[in-house]
Image (cartoon, rainbow over all chains, first blue to last red; front, side, top):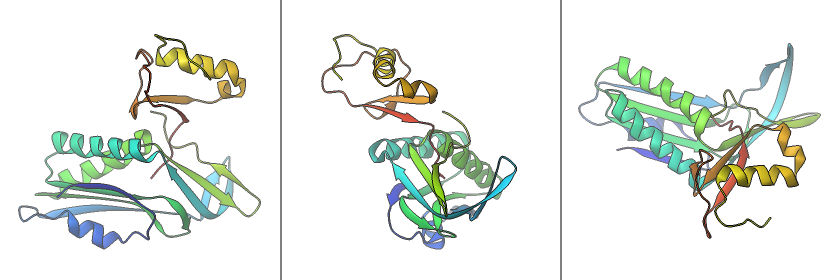
Length: 144
Length: 58
């Protein structure tokens, strides 16, 4: 089955990955995105203490659903699952899991890469990085 | 902020920036009823408009 969810609970990568697997598939590619401690910014290395994610939840779920539908149209894949965590995340905790099941791995890898790239560009979720001496809302990788 | 009839989503954003000039320094997106707006949509009574900065999920 396909699914797209927001949660404030701890994300378990394996349990997300197992939910997408149908019998005709031979490979599941799963992205485990997690909170990074060190980030390079303007030539300096900044240490993050924790992250806070916020979402425009109703629209985020709509945009996630569009990504699932488009990925299933454009790639030879069977099932997609996307779960994004919101709220406070400690370093190393999983923020997003994208699992793609396909008959063959090549399609699953391509779809998973496309899905995370588009999620970062279009889904209304925002990340705040909190440092020892301040905080900053992330500017994201690309504007929609 | 009050809106007049027949305003487009682009005009709503322009009015918002007029009232809050600091917003002009940000790259902003507008959504109408939880869909990205192109700027041309006519805003109707009861519609839900959101204005937000570049997203950064993942």
